[in-house]
Amino acid sequence: MLIFFFLIPHLLFSGGKKDNKAIETKNNNTPIIVQNQNAFFTGDGAKEKRVAVLQPTGKSLTNSEQWLLTLIQGVLTSDFGKFSLMTIIDRQNLDKILDEQKLSLSGNYSDDEYIRIGHLTNTQYIVIGSLEKISNNNYILELAITHLESGIRKASFSPTNCTIDDIKNQIIIKKASEELLQQMGVLLTDIGKKSLYDIRGTTKNADISLSKGIISQRNGAIIEPLSYYYEAISYDSSLQEATKRLSSLSSPIINGTLDESIRNDIERRKQWLALLTECENYYKNRFPFYVYYATKLRHAYTNYEKETCALFFFIQFQEDRIISEIVRGLYKTGKMK
Image (cartoon, rainbow, N blue to C red; front, side, top):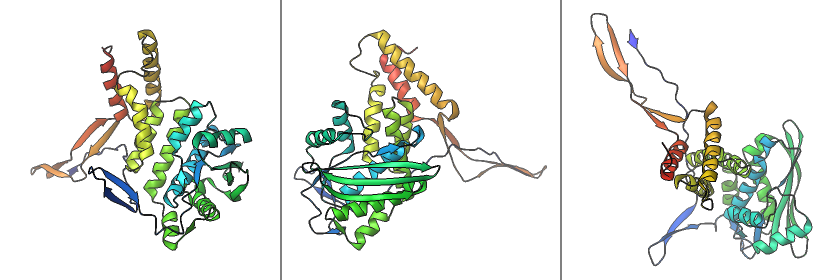
């Protein structure tokens, strides 16, 4: 008789995506990454154009579907940056500008606000659109690129029916990217089109986790977006936006203060209590640790009289990184007992 020990692990995901990037070196030996884009399109790649990609407006979407809008915005931003020479405003910088100017991130803007956003971001064109839910699993996606000075629509993706899977696997977004790029004067080569639609599973999962984290953070949460950002990086370690957002959100915790402008111990304690309460609620239905184990069984001993043997394998428990950062932060406050 064989004796086995079974353990159901908490699944960990990892992955990364390759891209057509070359490493060059400056005079000071600092490496820089240069995208090899020449093979992706013909012509000048619309290099004189500056574009800001705004989040589409959501129509009839539930709160749990808001991340679809952020996903669309993120994929379009990435595609425009990779498959053209247009200058694309970084989404984090765009969010910061809109937040500082007290402008909503929801995509609902007036004509005057569009012009204002163009001036603030120093862009000539903006990408706008909408995602409307028409039934349980059916949506209509519509996008357009408008020249801010003239108000003329330069490119459009006509209202198109799609399912939630079409959005999650990015097929409908990639189709929109191709059409919009073409109308902006960027003609993709066969290699470019193949690369555009070559969407790896880890990339899709990373983009989804990042999008959910952004929406959660905008709603005022801390623990949940941290978890999403860690998850995004585990899928794709090259996803710089997830890394930057994670660093920005976790830094105040690691340093022992949630807000450096708060000097009153009572107020600081309230913030920590709110964070710990959120943490407790978040981990009620989730494992606060990971389990690493060896898949190879090893022989421990044999009982020849009973004709049995014992087998074993190695396991290791590691607490969630979010928990580790909170504990580190608490120690740095000098108030942890």
